Image 1: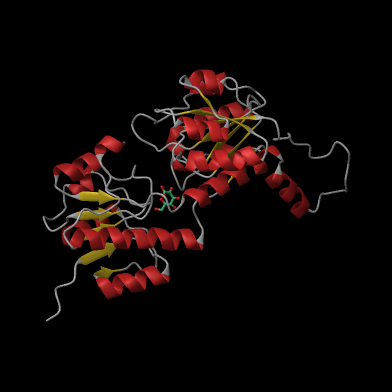
Image 2: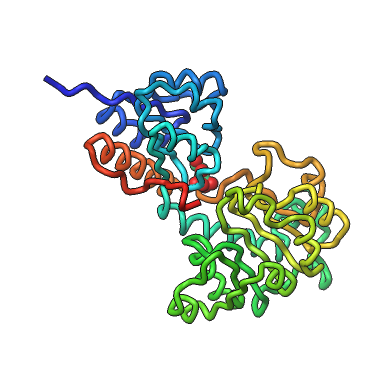
Length: 328
Ligand code: 8YV
């Protein structure tokens, strides 16, 4: 007789090969039309699911977790960031939480590099001009951006993605600076010719480009506060492919509008999918709809990781990508 399959509730549409494999392995409840789940639907889900597979668009907070039935034992999140999950409450309720680190590192670093180039060389502005039909032809002083070769890049958060960005940026002639809770290994620092700044304030004040690559945790909420943003040089750019909450978005918008910064390239926002309407009007910002890790390969790898985490857990072992409070 076949063993009873684990009830796995998946909150969003995942790549088809992943959904198919989940159907083979589990009693998978898919979301085929991909409508984001409301809080009421999430509460319904945690009452029946043995495993919940949420994404960044689901808030798995105290209100949801306090309604979870005793059968819910694992939250296998599809994504690396876990700021949408109340990890402490999950732990108190004996629910294991896993994520999908590592598999979206290179894609996110590529996107960050693309955004650095896009904002400094005014790619979006140029394309908008051309598409508007108002381009009147080449001019020697037309659409001038800033050279990135030889400039200083300050990376806030030198984890996997920060390091992958540093490798790319070095190839583009940028000198690498970073701020991190912990200094990276001397051999990595040497390879990247990277300069470590224990003081974030000191680093921010000296950089030409700043990239946010740290997770959003209580400690990094508004890490780039209005005060810190003021330390940044007027000709500098800010790039964010991490989480909107790390920057005070209103303060950043005010400074960009007042030309107190050269520009920004943002893939993430404080209140997604809402974007500060004033940002939409500014020419010197490149805006993307949270696409940093959006590759077919990346999404399949993320799904594979989710499956491995569920399978290992339901087979009675420790899943490889457990998220512990102490990691945050
Ligand atoms: C993912 C991300 O697209 O994994 C993350 O932390 O921010 C994204 O790149 C998203 O989280 C999928 O749930």
